Length: 252
Image 1 (cartoon, rainbow, N blue to C red):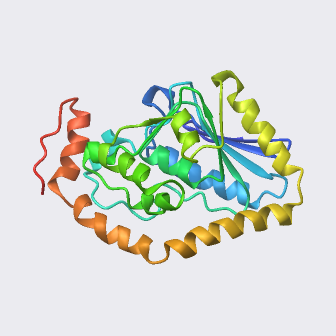
Image 2 (cartoon, rainbow, N blue to C red):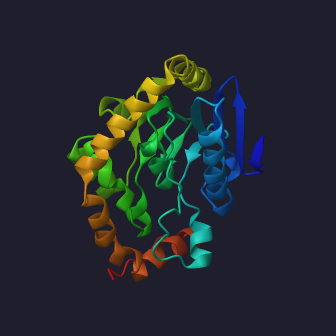
């Protein structure tokens, strides 16, 4: 089945797959894709036959380059709504099959998944500083990888390779591009064969530990990034991207 032309959803033998289908736009997360993710996640969560979800991108260049900056510039977006990019909030396991670059919102989607399989050429970056935007969603990242690596990603806006992402514990497996989907599906089949209550409880326990440790930090992160979102620079970054020029940062 298909959610819409830019976000594909299907279930085969108990394994569901979401494919961001905007290869020509590096699978950027425009409104149609974001809506499709929410709708597909709802279908997956309530489908008793679907045991595990794999999320990936079309093509071999990008898993997702993140939010659609051209769309953001046209809408003059300031503070995104809480569900601007859907939380992958489901009790069932979710695997990211990262087929290329995962930047910004694409990184966020990968961060939310339970397991990550990456192609050898995949890269991971939090590019918000490059465009004057915010990343309060990265508040939990220092609980997943070393804080200095998280800071490197946030402050430099430069990506890290799949091999380094594996080294720091952000990725579970790195495989050839040709083996990516088979590896992700094999992992999903292994999970689906296990007792569903045990699988759900294992996921819930780990997620609860992360959320409990993070505590009020998530709310504080939104407060920290609020003036960034509302700044002139937050409009200049997407505008410069749309106009294909270097941004003129003002610092306010």
